[in-house]
Image (cartoon, rainbow, N blue to C red; front, side):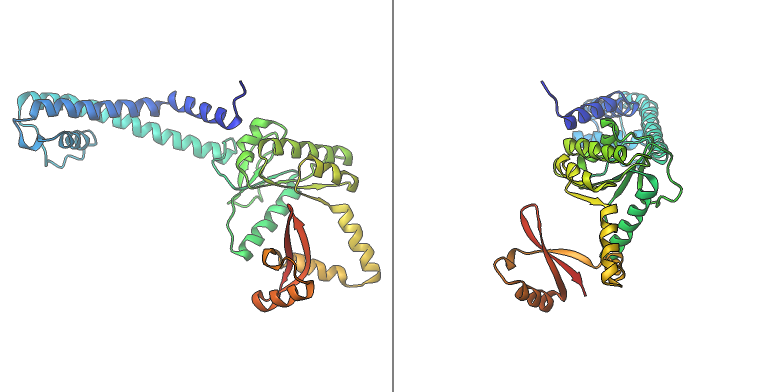
Length: 328
């Protein structure tokens, strides 16, 4: 029988919780609370009007073991006072143990997170994998675009080296994570991510760098069939292989640069215009459902009048038509 990875993670987490001191402390706390309340209720019922129902007994034990001591409910019988004398120190000890266990766990989580040795709890986030310099440039631009668009998306960077000193403080970091190890990809929450950006590693051989990217695409796609995978390859001929491996978008920096330079030879200043548009983040897509069947010139006029956008082209994404626009 094959058990899904998600189920295995839940079982492992449950097993860790069951083995923790917090779990046993919580069980002891509940035992003292409800059994102690039952004993007090049996002893005091009919002899003390304040213990006229079980809830009041639970309330009494709760305020006793938490040392709140409102004094609104007190035992009247000798046996009730004796039992309460037992509940007090035992309950306070268990509460102290539970509090200390929770504090220790939170401290450990904070330390592990600061060291990047934790497992992320995020979902629908962006995971960036690849060379440090490339990753930092992409992350900074993504953050800049989020600020311009007014959107907030969690970003996580997975790398097997130390945390970069220039990594933005609000970007989560997974330290010592081997991107080619399934467990480390799961630590980064790749199976729950909305977008995964895979960048080339700093390899001297271009073919090796692209092969690693393609292998990562296959690994990510196996863990998450719904994620939007964006990859960069160094060699244009590897672009088709990356797409076949499961990437949604593949960018070949060398090919893009070559085309820009060639066009600049005949249309001087074109590269500056395109770079200004890209750098300012003024490109975007809008759904084209209501424009299906319309002429391009009509779409341009309608979009300009309704949204004040300038239509520069129509693209097909996942069998759906979208309009590429430039915000004016």
